[in-house]
Length: 486
Image 1 (tube, one colour):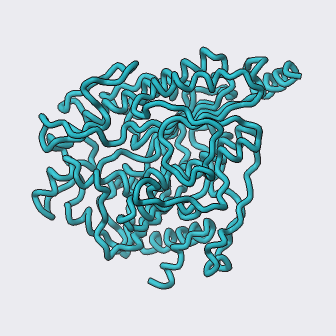
Image 2 (cartoon, helix red, strand yellow):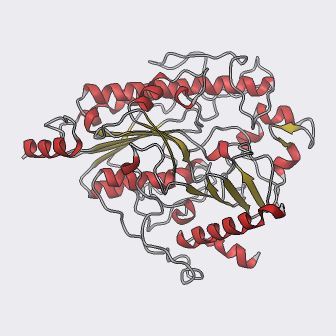
Image 3 (tube, rainbow, N blue to C red):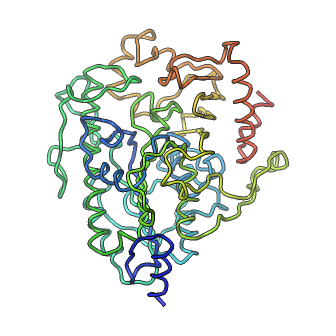
């Protein structure tokens, strides 16, 4: 029977697969923490990411991949359900006093794959709740700041001699901020998990602040450069974890039957990126290696987002999309919405070999909270040319995540007052935002010139507002009521 399955796969995909594991179609979803598109394969000439670069060369690299919200717990709920977080109920962080949790009717990816016959394991950072909604068969121990250790600890799960395929959800805590400050540097930049004694099995790679590439949305100050250097070092640990995990998949004979996806939960942990819906907050890495396709090294311009991850994995596993009913907790609006009883995203498995597939030219974003004191709902439609941000609570000042407010990068500029330049904006402009932000990304990729009040773009604004309303209706977003009542 296994030989027959092997022959079927051989004819279907044109590649030789393991005769023992040919039917297994394993999945590894590797999620780093706060990693923007900062890697050699994405054009950074300084940072050292040989494993990510090799993965891109052996698979598909998406240049226009986006988180749906630049907040950890909320984004992870989207990744693991295929539903925007205004539908999962995971509006913000789950840990400590924040205590946001997903709705009880949600059926997550590990549960759906278990029903499909998969064995499942989670390694590293979890950061969604409740546990029973996102339940895995096994939780692999290890320091989430040491992905090499995490990979080694995953070997037994990967190599288990079972007939079932596996799903490994592998999440680092790098390159998230943390680990104290570097006292000798200006304004005490954060260590991003780096420590003097290093980590077992990790070759620590350091970067001089003078070498780093300062993106346009950040101020080019000694503090920014010192923090970027620490950020780069933390990314190098992630890269080594990717390399070790792939080596283990190869050594155990399952790599050629394993879909490998590398993403970050959202962009980098700097003010102007994380917690915002600007490009540096949402635009994220996405590298995908499907072992059963012929073309390698594809650079795809398709616009995808994290609502598409669960549908893609279910597609690879041979499972149809599950059905969801509009949530019972929304009685006031359920009759006004046309929930399509399915996932909000769609599979991109079929376009992995195509650079510019038709019909992949629009994505949406939905952010409400980060920490519980940070209420600032934003809804976004982003196309090739234009992007509209609706700041629903725009009379409020933009709230800061505690670690971003305290960051050396922000404080070095904030101390100079509201007119000080923080990248392309002043401090005042960053904190106080208008109701609508409309950007022409063709001429203004840094989102520095708001066209929402420009009469020449009134038609564009109207069309994008309508698109947002349709998106909110389609995905059962409670904040659709704000169009009517505010």
